[in-house]
Length: 442
Image 1: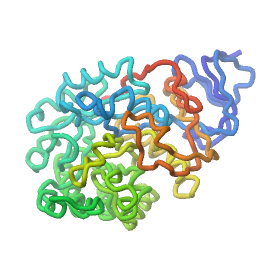
Image 2: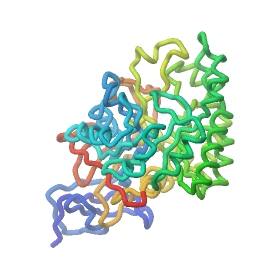
Image 3: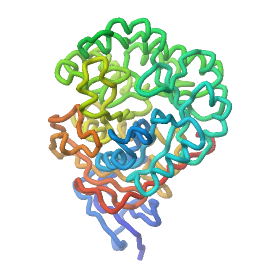
């Protein structure tokens, strides 16, 4: 008789072969069997009848603020939010204080995460003019998610705004580079629109669609010249999606649940600065174009761009208020609600949040329910009727722009390498997240 450490029985699993009701056996932290396990036994069994078992959700863009800004988030609270929301692994961004720009900084973050991170994790290395010569070496470090570039100023001091430096970054190394595309020169030219105070609804006027498109065009042109693959983060405009559809050979594309869910001007009138992020939430025309890009396969991945600030900071008058909102915990419920509304299929969601990240960043052992892969599962109740509330949020800042939003679909369990981390809204055990593993050509 077969024996396992864990068996998930009677769940509806989303596998590379399709969606099917099946059992899944786990041994030594990996998937050991898929199918009718009948009389097989296990140290622990979960009856997943009526539930859907997804590959573990991977969020490839979060900002957890440690070191230096722990008063609004740290690696413990941020990863607790991820686990509570059904996310098994996160890629954390480099705009901490100090910025993550060296091998020592990566080592420091990995040391901070050990024994404190609830989910698996990797850390982006920030590109800057003074570390270009080291990028090709440091991007190979264990636990390094790759290189991140800010072409436009956002939260923090990292900035690579000129083509010459950006070309040097693209020439150094081999892994896909993740880029925040806003044109710094145009941002400076248009800042007069909000200087001295303005309503937050002017945020997408200052940081307008042309600001994003101009940077994206510049990036792709330089990437093609350097023969280097790039990943364009949080794409927000119809024009960018049309452009990127013609340049998929070098550019992969991310958008966010926020940009697929909210729309201007309503969100700014209702939420004020709590709807403020970079690039901005735009009007419904752009939101519909993002959905079309999801349907057409232009979008490769979704990232939450989780970027918490305290209420005191967000309550400052615009534009003194910082840009960013929580997102890692609400990503799965929001997107399950969109699935139930018919905006995308469950299979497409899995491609965007599991197989897509694994494919783009060459993640080893994650992203699919298949024998030999990490036993990472996001178990969801597709029929659950829930309300997202601030009280549910694990993030230290304690708020979400989706407070009060009713959704259909909810994460009920987070399993990482065969270990139950969250079940029915409760975090279990102690933090035991490990660094994400990457292939050589990631």
